Length: 411
Ligand SMILES: [Mg+2]
Image (cartoon, rainbow, N blue to C red; front, side, top):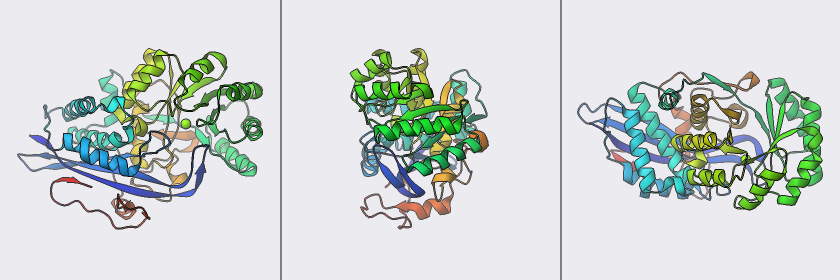
């Protein structure tokens, strides 16, 4: 019998090389949740580990790292620990069934608890696919009768910054070969228009320009912005209004020329269904962490495709290589994404948690890693150094690691 023998939850603090700023937050480090799952063959005693990650953000799903750890400990892990796989020859299918059963019972796909569930879900899928000696990406593609592609091309994101650093970053993206650049806007109207004009001027006409207002505007201001930048060909406006202003999103989708992409409004599978049914957008920004993991993200992709909504792969600022690998698995398993974000690992993080370098290469190219599971292996030295006490309020890099001992749930 294969059983879920051990679940270890911890929090890591990843320092950035520079502060990243948009209209909802400015940060110079990221606190992420890491889950390590052990599957055990009860006959032979053989074990296999899986690793998962999530990035809880209060201004996205309302979750904090502390809350996510408690949710995993008290609800999700408690429901899954000790469960056995129905079909030992197909561990990934079996674990998928267990994940979806648990998600249904605990209403994971209808509540904003995605970042709490995601780390555990990814760790379970990683472990099961390793046991099956397959990659999560290939398994996911085959499940949808598709063949996975071996790479994708990421675009760049420009955070708020001074006018002179804007030009430097835009030149860098152009030289690096990104084909899409998303600009964070919403600071002040003049600066927003300056930013878009400058981007078009420096990037030329062949690069797609998108903007993300992170909830900063209302209906009128969005329409006004859209008119002001008409000459600069902005492909999409992401989350112009606060997440629960759905009527404004419906009206904007009908009114403005650029595609309206939802991000903060889209945190659960149920929200995806609702947004599609009321026609509140032309695009979904799908981030694995906020929606509850890969299986939830795939459900949202399916809803989008069924309703003619474009899909954009999003990322949390501060994801380590583990979440980057999960996002890439989703993107390579589905052929229809309009845009890909993330994989800025080396540029943003002082240290990463995976041995594989998941940073997008020249042209934004991100290759699907070859290994089993999510395809990445933990950099154990960095991981143990960057783990912080989950309940500590003064958590600093380098704090003592929490060690898992014995079998069971460890937080
Ligand atoms: Mg966004």
